[in-house]
Image 1 (cartoon, protein in one colour):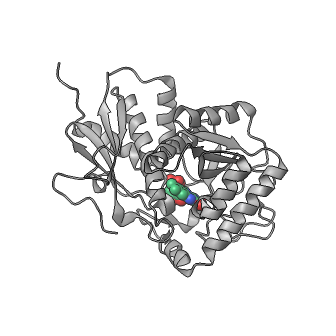
Image 2 (cartoon, rainbow, N blue to C red):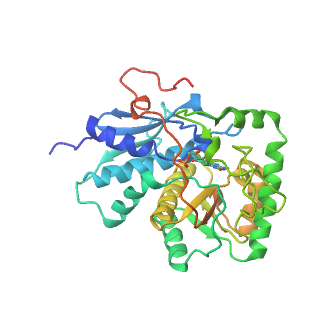
Image 3 (cartoon, rainbow, N blue to C red):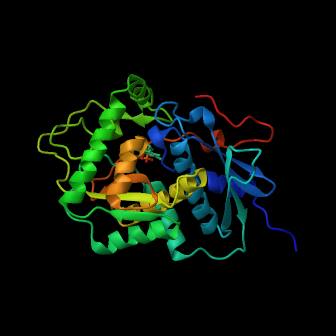
Amino acid sequence: MNTPTFDASALRIAAVAAVRAPSMHNSQPWRLRLHDGGIEILSDTARQLAIADSTGWAVRIACGAATFNARMALAVAGTPAAVRWRPYPAEPEVLARLTPVQPRPATYAEQDLHAAIPRRTSNRKPFRPEPVPSGVRLALIEAAHAEGAWLDLLVGMTALSGFAEIAQSADRVLRRDPAYQAELAGWTRADAATDGVPATVGAPVAEPQDLLPQRAFTDRRRAPGRDFEPEPLVAVLGVAGDRLIDQLVAGQALQRVLLTVTGAGLACSMISQPIEVPAARDQLRISLRRAGTPQMTLRIGYGDPSRPTPRREVDDVLVRCGEPVATRR
Ligand SMILES: Cc1cc2nc3c(=O)[nH]c(=O)nc-3n(C[C@H](O)[C@H](O)[C@H](O)COP(=O)(O)O)c2cc1C
């Protein structure tokens, strides 16, 4: 029997979904190629953030999330994929290789997750104060487990205040660095660019009463009385280790959690400052009494609809035979 292979139409299906993945500062550090009948997700090193992501952690989280989207799209198209991480030692930029497995109809879960891909956005605005129902909380924890990660929900004001202190101090450390600030400003867009973060989707300027830090993509002040929710639901996603593959696994799990959030009619923003500063990340791990490694923190709640952030054209992320992988920006 012939080994099943993916073709150019499957590559496009995978790429359309993959590019909707989140990435730090919307840098979109990925490319996709068809190789030996498999679809491969490659890191685009020209798009790695030199200051905020000197280790490549954020590239791997983003590419793990893109892999998850591609997997869902291929499953819904009738040919699910098996994933192999970093398949070629000689080509470390190939982070994932997806190969077809036995065709079958998509499960309801795959259909729901796939349907949520175009609707998922980062929502940095204040959420309404209603609590997230316990059934949804459980579904989020299960979404992380299904992809080999854990998700801890911070319960009670003591846990939340402890987290807020760690996150605010990490944010101060990062903001003290002029190079970090310049890089952030360089990825903040006033116009209709196809990458970077439009100022229109940034959180309003921080005010002293804010519990959590938000990345400063705008200098817009909030409307009077539009404070952030007093007791946000904060979740910490982590995995067993912190090797390159652990970070890719975390990216997949993150995306499954984000799509589950969207599917449940909720909104979410990511707060990665406490992951980016090693001392803060250690403190967070200790405060959770976890042996594994926190890989992302999330704020989840009921929000007003938020605008999608643009992406580059799908054709710009496909790698053709013999073409260099890194794109210019
Ligand atoms: C590794 C990683 C770190 C991120 N950190 C933050 C963050 O600290 N603050 C924030 O507002 N968004 C953060 N984001 C979200 C991105 O800014 C967002 O995904 C990107 O702008 C694309 O927008 P979208 O999520 O609405 O599609 C992060 C995303 C990733 C993958």
